[in-house]
Amino acid sequence: MILKDFYTVQSQHTLGSTITTIIAVNKDHEIFKGHFPNNPVMPGVCMIQIIKEITEEVTKKSLFISVLSNIKFMALINPEENPILKIETIITEEDNEVKIKNTSWFQDTMALKLSATFKITDS
Image (cartoon, rainbow, N blue to C red; front, side, top):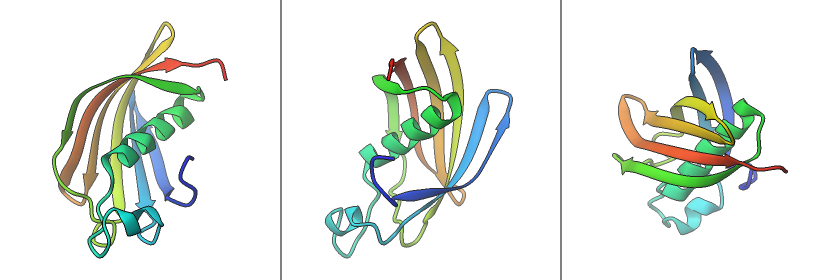
């Protein structure tokens, strides 16, 4: 985890190639003091990093982002109002790559959709 104490995994389950992970975001994390003071918003790059970390944990592989496509930020995530996120990820592995399709939610609101390709690294 790049950002220490940024989130915790509450639960995770697999159905076929879909992994559903429930996380709790630490609303008091230092990053929200700068993004933005008195109006915290989850940085998009942090969501992408969380998705990468979850994918690494599930695949047990070290990954490097190769391609991000179809990124759609649908709603702002305010960690004070919505600290619990559901991250649904379909993972497929081909050759030296891991491909994902992700949808992330808070409550009944879709917050993010993206597709990504990760290169598997040696480390």
